[in-house]
Image (cartoon, rainbow, N blue to C red; front, side, top):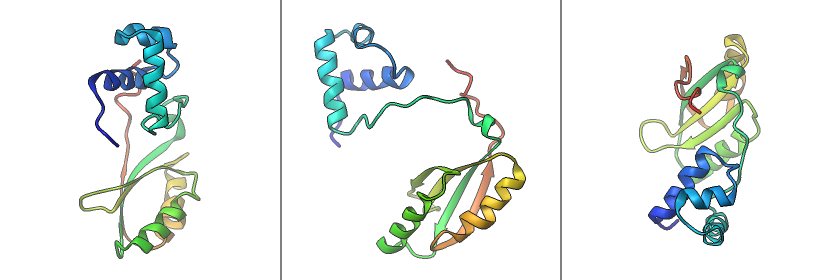
Length: 149
């Protein structure tokens, strides 16, 4: 992906804050004409910078327990990573999965209704993912940014 110019960065910042903003309001906030703004947004979509739009749901506290889990694989070969990533996609309780640079190979965000349910996810899902050699879970207390508007 190429670097974004300051106008594109401002467009993305505004869309992150409100993905439903009208093109006219977005253009006005950025200081562009509506047609120029729409061309830029469409170009960002075509380039894959904007991959879609989503509804932001109530914070993760509504899900119960939120765990950020560092996962280390036995080996970091393409085959091991591909198998792990394919398996992660089959588990809806795993909401995010990031390939990392650092100590852990991946960080996943998993949600469960309560701590007992998270224990089952840890034992029956995370520990059985292909190639996993180490799991380190951290449980979220609350999202301090969830209340911002």
